[in-house]
Length: 205
Image (cartoon, rainbow, N blue to C red; front, side):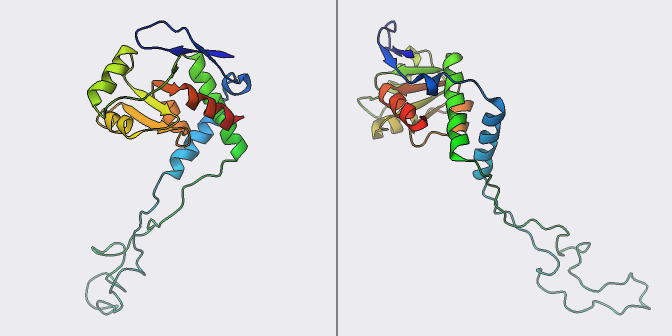
């Protein structure tokens, strides 16, 4: 199948050929949801930690005798009902990552890029190189293409492009290796270079 290559200020004239088995797949919503959730779960730190009554310092001595004080019986000052005591069901560090097979991951990415093309959310340009690391220059390029919230995917992210996009809150930059399902789904538009598109096709075949 062929995709149009967008040229700022001109009508799309050039076309790039991409493999149909990668960029024209059916949308598997269930699999895409599973892969997106797994990716977001894997990004969780899981470092939350609290102490149980056995881990809190002190409380080894019975605070008062069992009977005759008029107070409720107590065995330790580190009981969960005491101030400074332990937590009943204390949170512990855990791993939130979910297993996703490589084949499932590739099929999900194929499904996502195919749906992006069907929704006209994926645009192809010849190059994303800019002359200087200035936000104004990149912003003018995006405005000429009518783009606002966009993910820029280049085969080689140079320093100028990275620095120019850094101050734009709705613009993200990625290379082909750094692409992930969450980034592809959350951005309104994906602007990808011809060479990066070919690398994506080779990666997902």
